[in-house]
Length: 123
Image (cartoon, rainbow, N blue to C red; front, side, top):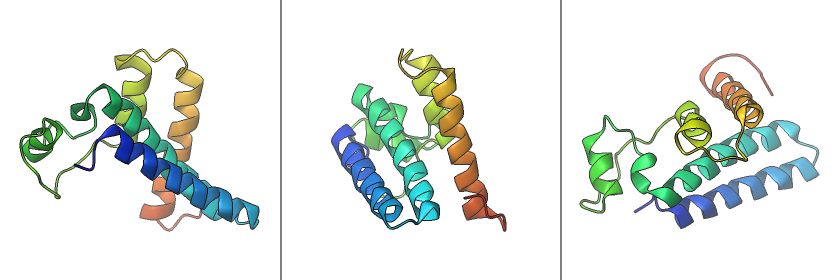
């Protein structure tokens, strides 16, 4: 399905392994980029562990159908990083994911977004 816990968890592991490999080659830009992607996917995996519907954009009916196992689509939207980290901290009350960790994850996600969607060099 693509939004199952194990699929997302394994993808986050691949991303962080790419980041660590680049860090070991002294490429901090690549490390931070892959780390930011891995954190978002790992957060989505954690939400999907509860239920895949927590990962899809609620405004996208195809995504909700996929999350409930009703239809198979490849062109659905998932929630953005901010929503992932907000849900991890407040909605699910995951005790180890406190405000400080949320702020760190958001700062990395914001830098990644600036890197990818603007002319800024943030990493």
